[in-house]
Length: 316
Image (cartoon, rainbow, N blue to C red; front, side, top):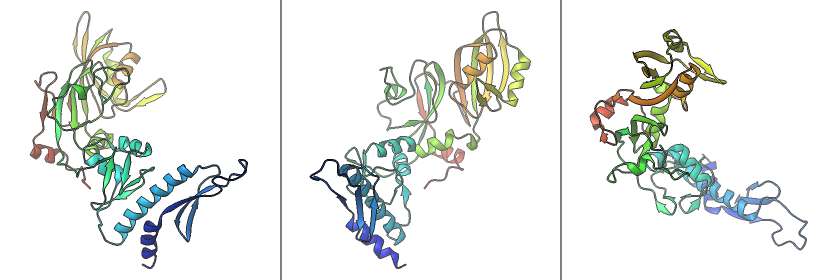
């Protein structure tokens, strides 16, 4: 492969040049360009500053470096950097991409501006100036979330979050999906951002079960019709299994099973049926059940059980 040496040289020669910097005329503005090698020049859009072009060049250089390592056989197990960050338990892949775009991630000393980069075990990755450690063993916890907690690492309104309430001895974890502020019950936590994303997907096939307490007259025929899906205010919800468990003079309990789990899905569907939800408890997520786990308690899933239940999860 004759072009491989050229790529290797390109990774070593990456540099930046901005034309007409300090031009005598402020009206003369030439495009900044990122010089990757003497024979390869990428010209940034008109009006791009030298700083922006420098960022572009740095990001390209870092990606070329690790790409060339992969192509020349230095390490054939290259992975996208967002996946590596997620596997290290630092954050989800989506958050990793946001952090990269915010300039918080560097590979071999070069700050990235795009998540479209492959890294290997030989590369040094820094997040906020700290070296990223290798991937830990995938772990999973079952947590009984009390109502009144936000499923977020940080809340702009200053409300208490799930992660602030967790025991301090837990490593950094991310949640598998979310539960609303006033929703309680089973919430899965993991140190593997890739696993979190995998378990959230409807394609994974794991159902979510809830007990719903409502106010209003329950029409059982309309509940059964939800199995065909329903559209509420332009949003299409897939098949929902709903069954009346107990009916009272003030409140009724309904069991609900779904696989999609869109934002506020149960509350919106119940409102569509003329019912007001005044308590919502998630009891099951896939093969994991809340059982008698007390509120605020978290227990780790045994490794053997975890491996058995996530056979479809391919680790990279």
